[in-house]
Image (tube, rainbow, N blue to C red; front, side, top):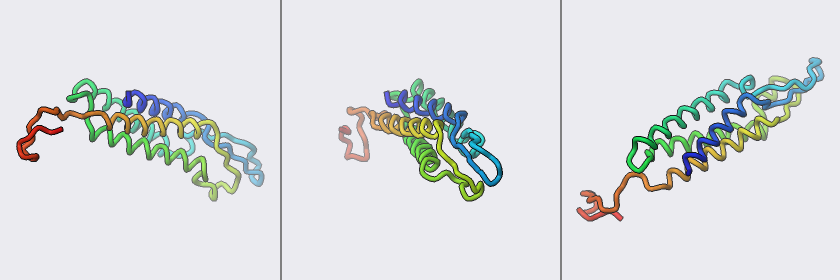
Length: 151
């Protein structure tokens, strides 16, 4: 279930890239309320979405091939990327980068909120997926534990 929550978060974040992230009002330059999509705001925003799509494809592949349907390293990597996506959206919500360059007022729009929700779902879903039993069998003998079965 965690993988599907993560994939839903990745999908939301990716959709948010193409929505308005910022409303720009620069009265001195004669620019009134121009909206900027996440794609236009910063090249890092679509990169994070594309990274998420790649991770979603890798998670789906691991679910079909890996023992017990997951690969812990991949899930933890996806969780780290989800946390980064959340922080990226949060940074645009708190204080959008580039405010000093425009000299105007930047206001967050729907895309930022959707990206924040997507990042949270992405990170939480990956975390839930990482909590699931990976590939260790309880009856497997492990030489590092004195030849006893791992619990």
